[in-house]
Amino acid sequence: MLDCLSGERYRTLKSSFTEFFQRGPSADAIMTAGAVTIRDAAARLIGKQYKRVLRDGRSISRESPDAELHALRIDGKRLRYLFEFFREIYGKSLNPFITPLKALQDVLGELQDARVATEQLRQHADRVPMQVENRGQLLLLGQLIASQRHQAADRRVRFHKVWKHFDRRGARKRILAVLS
Image (tube, rainbow, N blue to C red; front, side, top):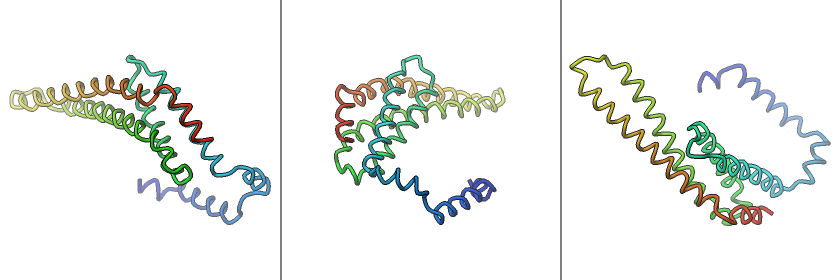
């Protein structure tokens, strides 16, 4: 991270941002943005991200690769950030949508953690020499790998249950009503 923040690309970004704020928006941007309220912009952003989460989540099957579930997790995070960022505008009306989203994020996060842990344990096990004195360590690593695989499989099953709650009938209409 320090390399990134001390790099040329970041210095350019800071410089161009400073110039943008000193210069201000163009007359066209003011005319266009003046017609859009913050609530309108929030509704568009949240609506677009909510539809993306629904589209991606509905496409996931029991055979979907872990990468698709991870992408859904990221999209869910973005949606939650939007909910939280615009909470002042909508008040408590977004709360009924945040709770099932948190549950979805939790199960997807646990799945991702188990998958990453499995991979890291396997990599470590591959580096342990196959010698008698390492037998206990290798057995333990095998048990840990099996445990993480079991947890990942369990979270995949739980995902479908949690998804049904998130994507329950009428939820889309209710959120669109809140946003309008």
